[in-house]
Amino acid sequence: MTRPAPGLIISAPASGAGKTTVMLGLLRCLAEDGVTVQPYKCGPDYIDPAFHRAACGRESFNLDSWAMRAGVLGTQLARGGDMALAEGSMGLFDGVLRAGESGTGASADISALTGWPVVVVLDVSGQAQTAAALAHGMATFRADVPVAGVILNRVASPRHERYLRQGMELAGLRVFGCLPRRGDLTIPERHLGLVQAVEHPDLETAISLYAAFLRDHLDLAALRQAAAGGGGAPQGSAVPPPPGQRIALAQDAAFSFTYAHLVDGWREQGAEILPFSPLADMPPPMSADVCWLPSGYPELHAGRIAAAGRFLSGLRRFADHHPVHGECGGHAVLGEALIDRSGASHRMAGLLGLVTSHERRRMSLGYRLATLDAPIPGHPAGARLRGHEFHYSTTLAQPDAPLARVVDADGTALEGTGSFRGRVSGTPFHLIAGAS
Image (tube, rainbow, N blue to C red; front, side, top):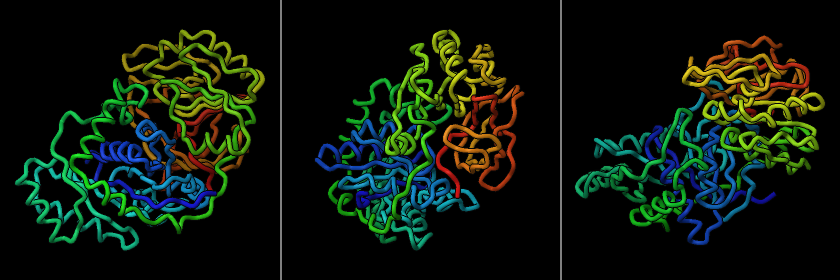
């Protein structure tokens, strides 16, 4: 294992402050300057890491203190590089009420674990010196979470900047730079967050603009010098075992929500990944011994999936001989039908009796702890798994046997148990790691 690199965490008091724009611009600036920068995402988000990879050319890995044991975190932290840069999620201290494997899921937990200082991105719209009080509170809230300083975003004018800097000086906080208001530097969003990196109309141009903007307004040398920590990270251990030796993995715009630490860990344990595209009407290769359908946005492509005869018939043939597992949207595709937002019903694989509606939208969001009542590929009955669920849909029918007993992070039992029939199984959540 490689020793964890010194690093920084890019965080904020809340979502929408500009963390992702700053993160992508910094990754590109560092890469352009010859720094081998290793990106990370705090928490369970599976969309942002693809943007990180586009910005710096290196795979981005999730660091989740609720779902991951110390050893699994240690494996991700030992990815090498001259410097690590981790993007936080939500606000710096936002997590669940009951700790999981290594914490509550807050970005602050990762700072405490690694020693990486936090750079707070503040949206200073509509405030001046009060922004310093907010930043000071963040810097003193947890003694084990070092705050290196702030980046002031959406600054209205030079006069506004002077007021802000005076407040930060009084609070004893370093200002790494002030970013003027720029309404054009945004990333398109949809209901589960950002659009996918592969769907961005001109991602390369956007990232180049972010980097140029940051070069004009941030002290990049000071940010590099502020990077610290990494030495106290835990020793690594294996992620969950691979679901098979040869894994047929659906990968395209409809099936893209995969965690890099899982797929990379499967490879490190000797598994071979065989990607295929349902949207290109490709069946899972019969040479595989398991098929894995991750989530994504199948509801946006339901008509194409329903018309993909080679994919659907090939998937059914595969399930006659080998295990098939689907997560969230992948679970829905294994069912009888998927109803899109317009109310149109699309016939799916029919390997399970599940009927999912995106016309009747209900948000399901949060961490999940599942105890399996039946095996899934790679995990026996009785295994405990930690994952995350996020979708806007309603289950209209689920006649098959429940797959697991599932509770949320507070221990409340949930209806979303997943289902199985023969060799076919599915869960409404995305697997992150095994539970201790």
